[in-house]
Image (cartoon, rainbow, N blue to C red; front, side, top):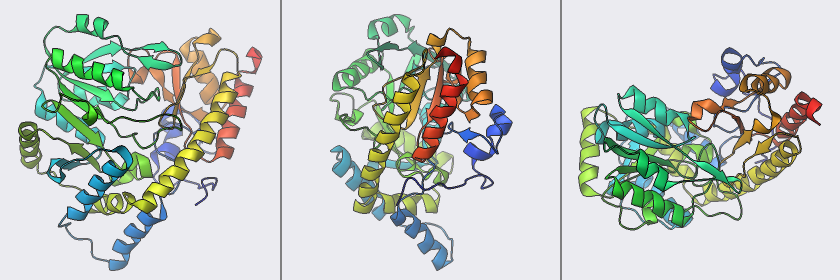
Length: 389
């Protein structure tokens, strides 16, 4: 396929394009939607064929025998990430926001603290609060264009009421790929404070050349507290299928999570299973390799242009397709630089404060769109901040 193909998503019940005027005041006819984390690309043909096969069959009944689906996940994790896992350890949830909420619901109690390394994906805090738990923000620092964690400072913050820590790996919104030493630091922190460790690795396939994602499951000594979360939805742009996987190696944790799933009567959508099974294949792997090369080109175009605007700084994007841009160097307050992006440049983006402490001076841009649209976006930004040139 050609990732350069322009697909008009307006009027298709697409939240990213159809809701940007209502939410951000960016006109739908002139605006560029660069906020919600889905891509403006069709999924690989093998996924489209799987859906078409179900449509052609014509009967949309209950899904049975998910052995091929589980085997596809096992194959993908082994081939792409060097991670061997037991088929019985896989639970399918309605996406990983639901998976996160299920973990919070299952392994913590009302009033417990749940630790986040902020700024971080905004849905984490949302589901923690909705479950009646407390968000404990451990703010990260920037060094050499990436985020780092200060565990001595975080240790001092803990009061003993915390029961869980959620890691975003690779990191959203910063795009940081954690090193083995950093992952070991997170694991040691979780052990010191007796925390369940939930590792959301939804972006693990979208890693830029020169960087390597390490699954948290490869870190030794934490199997008894580790919950892994993965999914095909970000990788293959099938978020509407609302499927994701919570993978639990420890038998006791697995039994507890399974009991909670059963109590709530949760079962997956059949289309999500068909799509993921098809995607986790050699054809899907070839498509992802091509996608990452294209995203890397978009990254270079976007970063070069944004960093050429005085006062703007795009964080080094090691993974994901979400560029995290710091506007603090402009000397403008948040209202002013946001107004210029949304009203002058007509670009809808995610606001930094929604990602928690440390996000105030940032906006998040989704660059998973045809390159011509990225080019247009950076030209609009250069014009909107032209007085700084």
